[in-house]
Each structure stands twice: as structure tokens, then as C-alpha cells.
Image (cartoon, rainbow, N blue to C red; front, side):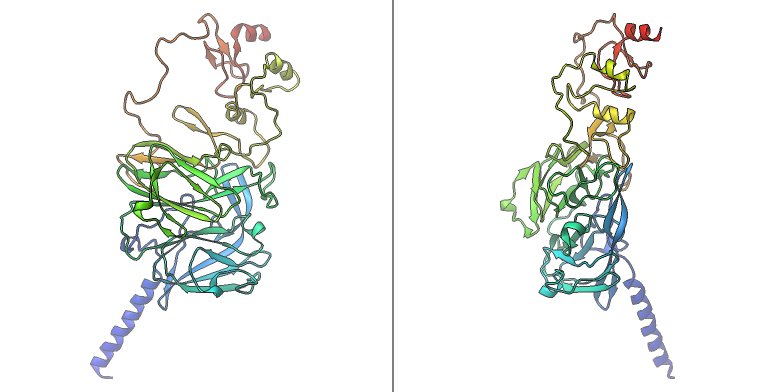
Length: 456
């Protein structure tokens, strides 16, 4: 063989090896070369892809899985790639994508690419636009992306069951050339569930009265914070294919809704607000500059959605005088606490003292730097810091500058006299000069003279 021909063939072979290796690099590993800021899905992940014959190829496996709502509660869910919501798919306008879907569910399924403009036969409606994907089968969806924006994917076969058990995820299409640089780009799926206490499988026949509400499949205090640096331009994408609407509210900042699942909103049509409503079947993109350092709540503003496992069979005790009741009941049920007269704030303390049924969550949870936070469900924190070592690490609680924290007015008269000391019957080390509840167990504090007489 002629030397020049041998060199040419070796060069071609080497180029093929290099190209083949490059095809296996994931989108996340290539982040520094991407024409967009990669999306962060808190408590979730981004789906890897490889280039096959000029097409970005993804692989989804729909299967039963165990999913943790928060520490102490694990449910039986139906997931994509072992998680709900499924991993976020990211691509760029103009890309041709191929998505392989393998069905490991006990029944047939199909995947709908919600909001994506594509050929009818790729829309993913079992029985209408395609045959159902039977258990054990793999189907290929392939189409070119002719738009950009925040879209979703979800099951479109036996929807009440499959979506009710968690088969959903984000499909995010970035513009080929972004007009505005985004520093931090987050995606949050809004979901609601009904899981009876002491069970593990969501009841998908419940359509209106849900008891667990989640951001990306997690309820507070199991939700990951959104960590940003002061001055960052932040985008948050919200998606909802559930049964209820969710007005999502941010503290300390005002954002603008810059896009819907139908496309970008012109700047002239945007307005500032602090709450955005996300209805079933919708996505909403908001943007703002994080200019206020601190730990800022981000939550649904329906009052019971940032709560966990609320029951409706408890009698309304607001304003009911329960004097003497607690002591009498304690003779029969040691540790009983009379609650509800002044509100539900004692529920978090009760959960620490009297565990509830297995595999459920206390209605209120979370401890902050100043005491119980008393939240749950669709609640997390936007943590804005002037200095950050890493976006990937929780920076801990915000250190407030001196003089910037609300506090009790000095010298204000107390309703109790200093001659009386109040003690917890269960935790005698808890002593204070004001009446109230024990911070450890929630029981009503009693005058020390009464507890002494009982012990003797």
C-alpha cells in the first residue's frame, strides 16, 4: 500500500474514533460548551443523551419504583428512570431528537410530549396516534424541534392511574441563541397526592381532596433549597399536569412571567408580581434578579398546600376553653396534650412527642435558626448569598446583619409575675416565667408548685 494512502486511512480511522468518543459525552459534561445555562431540577436530575447519526438520542424507562416524599415517608410510585418527576430532557431548538421509551409497567403505556410541536404520529396518544407500548416493548419517538420553551412529557395511557402515580417530567427546549443570559435556571414540577396514613400506594381514585403536595415529588422539609448569588439573574420554570391549580409565591423579590407553554411573552406584555398561578396542563417561566440576600420562602399560597397530611375529621377547637381537660385525660392517656384552642401551632411539637401513623408526615415540620418553621408540602427556600463557595452546597442559615431581625420590645411588661415559674410535666428541665407550651413536646406548662405537689 502506498505510504500516503496508509496515512490517509489511519487519519480517517482516528477521526472516527474521536468522533465516536465525542458522541458518548453527556449534555451535562458538555455544559461549558452549551449555548445555554443547564437547568437545575432540585431533588431531580437531567437525562443524559448521546449523538447517534446526527440525532440526540435519549432513553426513558417507565417502571414501578420506591419514591421518598420526605424523610420518614416512602411511597410506591410509577416513575421514569427510577424517579418522579422523571429526569428533565434538555435540547436546543433545531435539534433532531430520538427518545426511546421502554415499558416496564404491568400494563400498556404511551408518552405524550405535552406542548411540543411535532408530527401527529409522534404525539404519543395510545390507541389514537400510535399502538400502545406493551409491557417489555421499546418504542422510538423521533422528531425535529421547531420551537423553544418549557414543555412537559407524561403518560397518555390510563392517565388517572399512571399520571396519578408519577409518570411525568420536564421537556425543556432552549433557544438556539438566547437573548438574555441566565445565571441560575431551575425547574419545579407541582404535584398533589392522596396517601392514606400507614399505607404506601397513592389512592389515584381521589380527585379533589389531596393530603400531600410536592415540589419535584418532595414535600418540605425534604425539598432542596434554590441556591443563588446576589445579583444572579434567575429563571424558575413551573410545570403542572395535576388536578389542582397552584399560586406560587416568592418572598423578598418580584418576578415577571416571561414565557408560557405556548412561547415567550413580549417584554411589553410582562408585569411584575410576586405570585404566579399555574393551572393543570400549564407551564410558566418567571425571571428576576436576586438582589436581596437572605433565606426567602417559595411556596404555594393555597393555605393547606404548604402543609402535610391534613385531616378534616378533627373538631374545631378554636376558642374552646379546655382548662382542666388535659389533666383529666392524662390520667387515662399519659402524655395527652389538649390542642387547637389557639390554633394548630402545637402540631409540630406534638409530632416530636407523639409519633403519628407509619409512613406519613407531620402536618407541620422544619426547624429554623429561631425555632419551629411549621410548614410542609409545597414549600422550599430561595437562599440568596453575597458570597458562595459553591452552588451545589447548602450555605446554611443566613447570618443577619446586626439590627435587622425583629425582636421583642425591651422592657415590655410580662403577663406573668416573676414569682411563678412554669414547668413542663414531661420535661422538668423546661422552666420559664411565662405560661405557654413546652418547646420539646408541646404540653401546656404548669406552675411549679402544682408539679411539686404531684411528685410528693
